Length: 394
Ligand SMILES: *Cc1c(COP(=O)(O)O)cnc(C)c1O
Image (cartoon, rainbow, N blue to C red; front, side):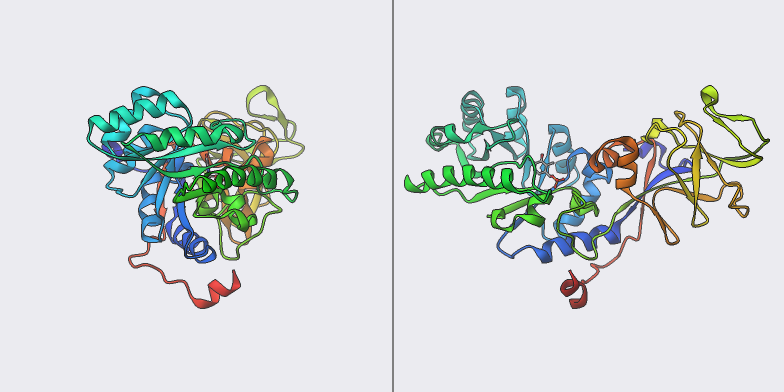
């Protein structure tokens, strides 16, 4: 991504990817999953901002069968990086993309007769028989053929000699909340389709429904494969879902103190004078802002410096935030500050930032921009073996 600039001195604001923790999360997920169930690692949007190629390479080592992606470009990035495992393009393809899919062995999800015929024609012209997955809409009402109209479409796919119906899938609208009523309705609709296919003697190798929430809380829906995204990165999809001990966040966001100001009582800090000092305050400026994906809050949140919380004061600018370090007298210029993650026994969680943003953890993770260079830490030379203790405590 940054090859041309790789040797520049790093900017004093960055994301840190803990590869040892990533490996541990992948191992704990794999160990929790019955052997016969395949693991599709969802690495769309740069693996939720963690670096898709790095995550994919490790996931291959830890037993991932294949990868879930959103865009053609994301899939080609992995192919170019040497990933040979199946790449499943979630979502819908434009007809113009299908030739690429066939040429580079990218597996498309299909839900629409015209695309199915186009894909079959292109595959035939390449002299290939290509795998496809049919997406069934069981209540999400986004992509996919309705559950009560799915059987004829399966028959259309089966009639195409250049296509191989490798999978059928659906996606939950809600899988990680305590009330599983709607998820169970979706499972029942999906099962209805599978049952009707079985009566016709049609067997589909890969039936899959579960995202992270489903993987954790709906074991009766695991079937042949689960599609796990956010959990790999150590974030549980909700506060109430089942927890696996040892799974922990992989990404931190850090910066350094770039300036220190002593502000006299009654003076203001930042744009629009949104903060006035009640007494003399010592203020640290951190060179990170909403242009890096930091939530645009004012007088809320903060940073960890010397293991203590420094409250954010004033507004968040494009390239800077100001935090109060009056109670952290040992803080000096260029000391490290943590904006997301742990320092000492303090932690700013992704959930906390999501609450600040009035959004969800997925949004916080994927919104850190590439202007923050990714630094990988804790890279293990050898595969770190999971101890029996770690597995049983899970
Ligand atoms: C993003 C996505 C997933 C992964 O969801 P997580 O909640 O991050 O595990 C699974 N399936 C589909 C179709 C998706 O779009």
